[in-house]
Amino acid sequence: MNISIIGTGYVGLVSGACFSEFGFNVTCIDKDKNKIDNLNDGLIPIYEPSLESLVKKNVKAKRLFFSTNLSEHFKNSDVIFIAVGTPTNPNNNKADLKYVFDVASEVADLIDLTDKPKLIVTKSTVPVGTGKKIESYILNYRKELELGKNFEVASNPEFLREGSAIEDFMRPDRVICGAESNFAKSILEKLYRPLNLRETPILFSKRETAELIKYAANGFLATKITFINEISDICEKVGADIQEVAKGIGLDGRIGSKFLHPGPGFGGSCFPKDTRALSEIAREAGSNSRIIDSVIQVNESRKINMVKKIKNALKPLENKSLSILGITFKPNTDDMRESPSLVIVPELVKVVKNINVYDPAGMPIAKNMKEFTGVNWKNNTYECVKNTDGIVILTEWNEFRALDLEKVKKLLNQHVIIDLRNIYKPSSMIELGFKYISVGRGS
Ligand code: UGA
Image (cartoon, rainbow, N blue to C red):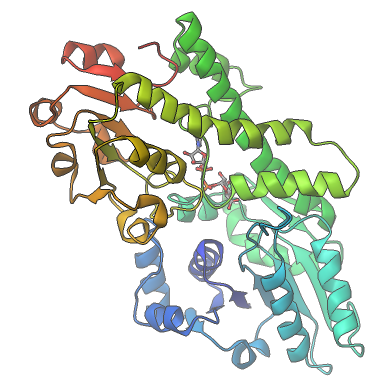
């Protein structure tokens, strides 16, 4: 089976590498020539554990190719995945489908009327009804095309997480396929046959259902995080411990223990964008989305509340020097999109005398972001914390979990740690002589 994947962002590149690892011939296509040249030279544009070795292995095996030119690969492709970005349109909070429809017109132009039909599959997160819209768009764009005879459109949303993307793709909890015809079903079945060995559930549904499953999953997970963040606030007021509360409720199989870690609010390229889009999908459909709307609102105020927490712990802040450990929205990624640090750091820059920042992967991107104007970039944790009056941990990178805390103590002017990811045990930190403030565990 020959696959073309359009868009070499997280989803496109990881899917391409993994489908080629399954044994299919895959060409990843992107308009960005520089990106494609780099990929052909073995340079991976994103920080994702194991991706580089998987790409190199499959390029060497001549199963994975990179190109800027869809037309050269189109004829040979049985299936064309759309994996381009669907960012929030700031004017209306909806997912911007410009890139998706650009691909649809390109594909429509390339379809050969005498050839067997092509299956076009959306892997990007797209609003409910987009599959149908792509179908109508193509039929309208090239009137001689016939649905079924020349092409079909299916939905196959992706559930991988940044930082564990390869593992998530190769060992998913489930695969969702929005495909109604036998032609579309049989291609998707073949594509995911390698997962049969692990008995991965492969769910076939209507296209609209598949599209909504993706938003409902992200919306539910964002709600779960927001819920535990709210419970952590209550813990602080009543003297309960959020770690134990999360464990206590998570052991109930109906609730589950995952995604119950409190923190400075969810960020990244998916949850913020997808909760906003889900709210718009509901509004347009004339339905209510009061829970999702609250989640969006509560998550925004969460970041500002974290600033208040830091200010409270270190007041007066004016003449203080602070060190920030971690700025990416989560560990094992260099992705800075909608990271809580983008709200928290600028608020702190306004009041403190000096801010040092260190992140194991996020600094090359963050150095060019206006939100970090005025901070001092440091090369490692110890350089970062030296001579500062307090540490704020914003991202739970593994290397922050294993710090030489005696050394940290010696380097600090004041022994204050504000840990917004709960990576340390309060009792051990107090024993070591720190003023330790974490989330939902008293002070
Ligand atoms: C998320 C979903 O988890 C994936 O299943 C989905 O495929 C992806 O979005 C997407 O739609 O493409 P991702 O954004 O990579 O994946 O990251 P997550 O691990 O889900 O974390 C998102 C945010 O929630 C991070 O800021 C993280 O720190 C926060 N989080 C997560 C918490 O604050 N607490 C938790 O318990 C879990």
